[in-house]
Length: 104
Image (cartoon, rainbow, N blue to C red; front, side, top):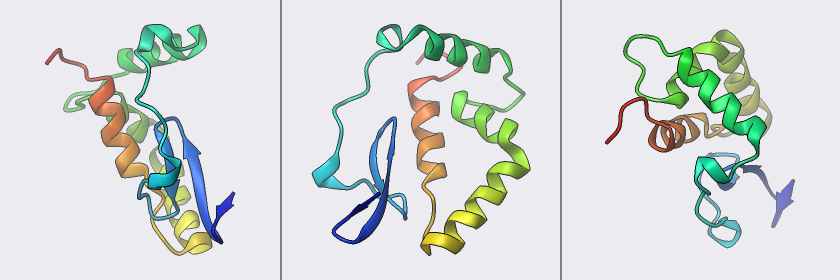
């Protein structure tokens, strides 16, 4: 997708430029609590939390570990195609914040 000639992506946390910066004009509302998400997503988040490894803070860390080499290949491909970062690090941090393994 493009806006003003610039590529952007829509993720579960809003609209982002190819560089991972949130696009102000396209910001989405605040995320809904997990209990309001579709049941399939709720189950997926719970399954991810059971796959936790030592040192992982939240679901974002687990997703990154599970994607492993495929995630790194995607980052290289995204940079080659769009000339900027994919924003995976921002999404990882958001997932860790929204779904931490320990209560704050």
